[in-house]
Length: 323
Image (cartoon, rainbow, N blue to C red):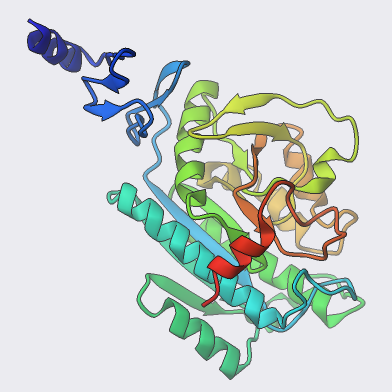
């Protein structure tokens, strides 16, 4: 009779929780395992099940890379005070690790990675190519000349270069993106579960809200500098909070890129204050969230309010991603 009941529940799409034995007979899993199924259902104890109506089919990851500039627009040293190429290598290494972790769990999910390279030296570029040689990663060289008539004249070459690479990454997302697009910079270290958590949380929260959203993988210190009100949401294995500001590392849908393309484009035409001015304007109309605690660590100066996320073992994450 028990087997028949379990079989019937499976047919009807219901899940059974046996709290005495700490198992789910219908899922054939222990309750401390991941009970969710990508593109089908998200289950978080004791909140129950969320039917996935916003399915994630593919993700395009776009990494902006500059292996020479230490910290753009600053004269400070980054945490650990290493040459910039070392941060780029560890960042990409951590991203590959996170992609492989996610792909192993979700083999049917299409994941494509593109690196926008801003004039790396041959030595640095060869080092990066060696790092990604066994992975599906495309490197696109940045052409500054393409943007000289588009972007306003800047005080420094570095500022123009930063705006050019940002515009190129947005154009690539608009052109090549199919579903989700993840814009990244090469001075972030990512936890191994980062990509899996973002994708699983995206489909859960987006399904609950019945709308596409923006997501930032880093819990920035500057978000705690004022008494800003926020809402807390449940993701796959983390809490997420609503925010109204990000830097240039974030994820969203191709649909929202198209909807707000003028804002994306306008943000790249000049140096604004803040730099992400027109992106932040989008968050006045759309929902943007970041994780508690962080899934990615922005490796800036130790005193930067835009950098090191709280309650993360910085040194451990740095050492783990040595290439």
